[in-house]
Image 1: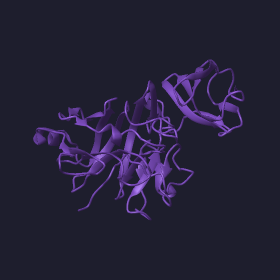
Image 2 (image 1 turned 90 degrees about the horizontal axis):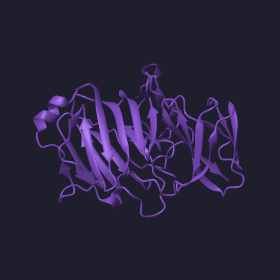
Image 3 (image 1 turned 45 degrees about the vertical axis):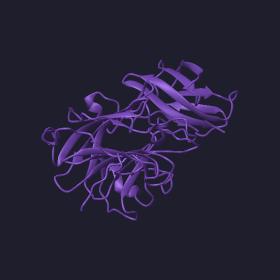
Image 4 (image 1 turned 90 degrees about the vertical axis):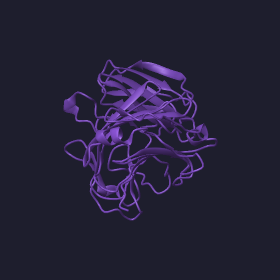
Amino acid sequence: MKKIIFSFLVLAVGFTAKAQVDGFFPQFGQDAQWAVNEQFELVFTGDVAPAPTASIATTFEGMVSDGIGGNDFTGLNMKFDCIIFDAATNTQILLGYDGTWGSKGVSLEFSQWLCQATFDFSYGAGNDKWMIVDPSSYQAAVVKNGYNAFEINVDATGLISCKLNGYVCDVPYQAPLASLKPTAVSTFFVVFANNITGFKMKNLIVTKGGVTNKYFVDPSSGIKNASHQSIDIYPNPSKGVFTIANIPAGQKYQVTNMLGQQIESGVIKSNDHKLDLTSKQKGVYFVTIDGINGKMVKKIMKD
């Protein structure tokens, strides 16, 4: 059966260090096949090679992974527009970690006919659940061969609720927290994947812990396109002195550690503001700037 996969999953091994799309990391060998077009859509236009599926990964600039395992998927809200095809296809959203396909995580599966969920790819024996009571109402809400508006929310208890074009999937999925929170040191990513050409998505808005990042959004709509206008901080990593570039003077910033504790705050004073963390311990920090269109966040590392 021909199948399209749009997935959130951990696949840390096999991604290139440098992405063609800022903040996103194509699977090895697929750099030139992923791009943002003139309509500010993330598109896959190449052949599905060398791996079985085309994949592109992101941590949403550290929002869901700090490289140690402190940032899990609970408290995450995602809104995005993605195509559902009028074919025997399957749109799959995976929340997972530990660097291997399907070993840990929650799978949400959408098609033009149904929506279901399972954890750790374990089907049957009560591990999977249909998320709709009335399939005809769900099917009436689906746009075939066109964009569909998805919203997925994961609360602190692991309860996952979904919407499609405003239709509320009326059976929220209670996922085991063990499938959403690492029990050991883990690096995990959100991964988008498909196995045929023609994939497109746009208007990706991700919120967690009071921070909102926005990607693949037309700037003329008045919403910041973080894929094109993210915080520029260099060198990164650094021995302690960083430059915050291209942020207008007068905007407030704060620096937090991996525990969410604020260690520094201030106001941007110039187009090449110096951030001095030489007195701080080595490790990962997050710089948050209050912009006109909401908060922007950047992960930095002092070595």
